Length: 114
Image (cartoon, rainbow, N blue to C red; front, side, top):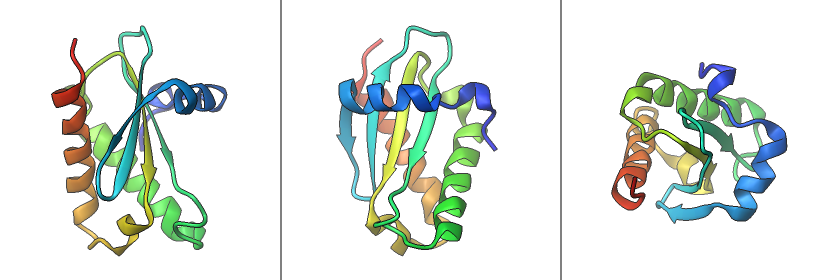
């Protein structure tokens, strides 16, 4: 699981959603906002409309956080990053989600300048 120190606090999520820059992927939307810190922080939003079963939503969230944790050294520093999962993400195979997360994170590297 991703340590709390690397997660976006709840009170900040609305600011990131309002002011952040959005980047689309077929299965996930990334919302990015610089945070003027030495680390990047992450959050994952999964609507109950996208997946009514909480068990499946929580599992997806855990997979995303674990993928981020394993690749944290490769991710650009100084950003707030929110993953907003789309309904299409729940039709993926079990092993596809980590690949999708890494593809989405590569968007950060390609579109955000230092």
